[in-house]
Length: 386
Ligand SMILES: Cc1cc2nc3c(=O)[nH]c(=O)nc-3n(C[C@H](O)[C@H](O)[C@H](O)COP(=O)(O)OP(=O)(O)OC[C@H]3O[C@@H](n4cnc5c(N)ncnc54)[C@H](O)[C@@H]3O)c2cc1C
Image (cartoon, rainbow, N blue to C red):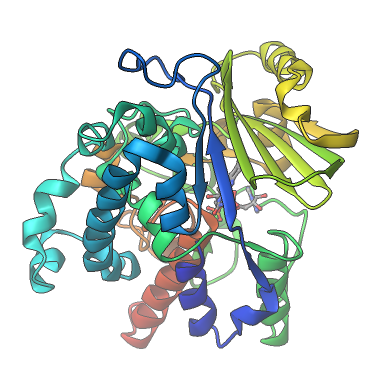
C-alpha cells in the first residue's frame, strides 16, 4: 500500500522515488476451490478446482473471473467509493463519529459497524475466498473481521500494490539514513528494559503497545489486566528460499491442510502460513516441515535452496515480539473501540507508534502512525505540557 507511505515520506521531506516501487501487475492467485469450508453451488468450480486470478488491472481480472466478474467489478467500485470518503480519517490520531460527521460522512457509520462476512455475503460464492483472503492469511474468520477489510480489493485495483525494488528493507533503511542526517543517534541490538530508567522528557515507543504497558512502564494493574486480555495476532510460520522462477503471480494462496502462501520476486521465494500462537515450538516446527514438504509450491521453480525459517516462537525470539505476536488482532470489536491512543492517557510523556495504534498494522499504516505520534508530541511540547 503506497499511499500512506507516500504521505509519511512527504511529511519527512523524503522522496518516495528512492524506494523504486514496482507495481505487482500479476498480483495474486487463490485456489483451488472449495477452500475454506464454503461449499460451492452445484456445478460450479468442481473437477480440477477453480482458481481465481487477480491482476492490478480490474478489467483483466473481471474477464478472468468469467460469470462472477460483473459482481466483482461492482463490489470494487462500491468499496472504493466508501474507502475514498473515509480515507482522510486514516491521517488523524483518534477518528470517531464526530470526525465522521464533520466530514459529512456520518451516513457511512452503519457500514463501519458491520463485519467483513456481512459485506461480502452477496458476492458469488466462488470469489468470496479470493476477496477475503487477507483476513484468512491473518488467521481470522471473516465474521470477526471488520468491514474495512473489504477495501483491500479497491486498494489493489484503484491504487495499486507495490514492492520496493530492493525489498521491504529499503523502507527502514531510507528512514534511518534520513534520521541520521537529522542528527538522530540510532542504537541497534540494545533492548530497552524499563522506560522509567531513561533520562528524557518524552518517549515514543514503537514496541508493541500492550507490551510497552505490560513490561516497560508502571501501569496500574486494572489497566494492565484489561490490555493483556486483548487478542493478539500470530506472525505465523515462514521459510526464506532462493529459487529460479519461471514467472507467474507475485502471491499464490493454497489450502493444503491449512492456508499457505507463496511470495515470489525474481530469485526470492517466501513461504508463509498462519499458525496459532498457543502451540508448542515443537508443533510449530513440525507444521513448518509439513508446509515445506507439500509439493504444490515448487511449481515453476528450480534450484530451490532453503536459507532460513521461522516458527512463531522463532519470530518472537529474533524480533523481540511481545508474547510472540505481531500486533493486536484486527477484529471488528477492536476497530469500533479504537486502537491504543498515540498519547498515553496513563503515563505522562509516553507516546505510542506502530501497529497497536491508529491506523494499525501494515508497513504503510505504521508509517502514518509514526507521524501522528510525533505530531502529537510536537503539539504538547509547543503547548508547554511536556
Ligand atoms: C510474515 C509477515 C508478512 C507480512 N507482510 C506484510 C506485507 O506484505 N505488507 C505490509 O505492509 N505488512 C506486512 N506485514 C505486517 C508488518 O510487517 C507489520 O504490520 C509492521 O512491521 C508492524 O510495524 P511496527 O513498527 O508496529 O512493529 P515492528 O515492525 O515489530 O517493530 C518493532 C521494533 O521494536 C523492536 N523492539 C522490540 N522490543 C524492544 C525493546 N525492548 N527495546 C528496543 N526495541 C525493541 C523490535 O525488534 C522491532 O524492530 C507482515 C508481517 C508478517 C509477520
